[in-house]
Amino acid sequence: MKENISKLVKDRGRMLNDSNKTLESLFNIIFSSKDNIAVEYISGFEIKKVTFKELESKIDNFAYSINKLYPSFKSEIIGIFFENSINWLISFWGILKSGNIPYLINLKQPLSLINNSFKLINCKYYVSNIKQNIEGEFIDISKLNLIKEEGFTYNFENKLILSSS
Image 1: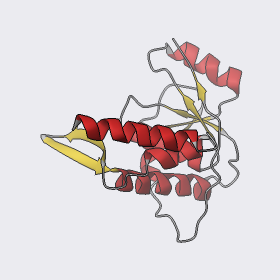
Image 2 (image 1 turned 45 degrees about the vertical axis):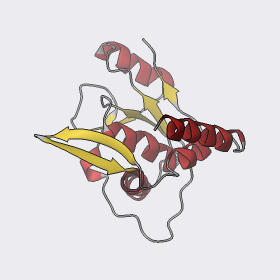
Image 3 (image 1 turned 90 degrees about the horizontal axis):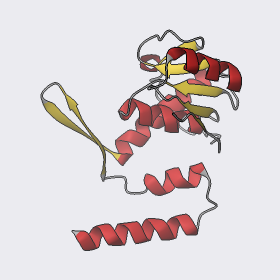
Image 4 (image 1 turned 180 degrees about the horizontal axis):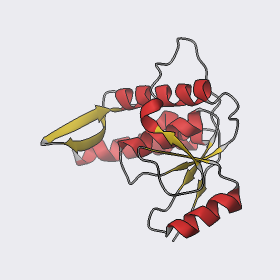
């Protein structure tokens, strides 16, 4: 087991060194092992497992939905209002794949500071599963589930914004 992990880390490091070092190339490296488990989470009393292939499909549908439902969005800053979860992963990579810029909101900050940050960076939108008391326009993640059309291409953004504590 230890040898397999060591080999995986070396292989991924080599892939990263040989890449153009963009967020898109990082995505392709991370999601290259399609059948491996990407995420485990608890749903009720059951542990759910999601493979990288399944997660990538959810990300693709999210990105496609952003592009279809918000066609004017190009390099738009979109806040992510989730704790660490599968929805956070889908939102982060989906926003990048849609050609937009994810803003990683520090949920430990008071809402007043989050609102000030929104103004400072000109963030007008945020994705969440619940409308929050912040000044951006709410994008409900449950509405971002259109099935990607065959042949649809993505315009991967190579920027992100994060706030620290």
